[in-house]
Image (cartoon, rainbow, N blue to C red; front, side, top):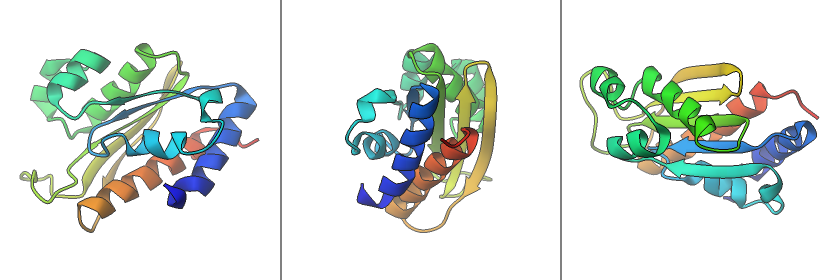
Length: 162
């Protein structure tokens, strides 16, 4: 997790300066964002919890994502990413959350959703800050690593710097 240390330290500074706690809701990254955050000493001051919701059922049970929303839009969709981020806030004591859902590969691609398709959402108490579609290249490991990098960057961008 050393490759993410600079970004995590910047995120830690921004969160700590504002007294905010972070929650993560991860599907395709399987907890890598949380792992990157908690690899840094002192992360208990600003990292509240992480949800690994790989299955649709986990998204529904742990984050409160409506099963009908998943059925209507698919797990890899802007709507589900937003619901995951908002659900992470509702089911934690955090004030800001990031969610990712995507297709890391090598399988899982569907029509219109190739490998490397990832939806990312950042939510903050009081409203959604950001959601975006990522189209990433490379193998499974590369897609997951790039997703973590994007998630950390978007979180940092969503917070005024200390």
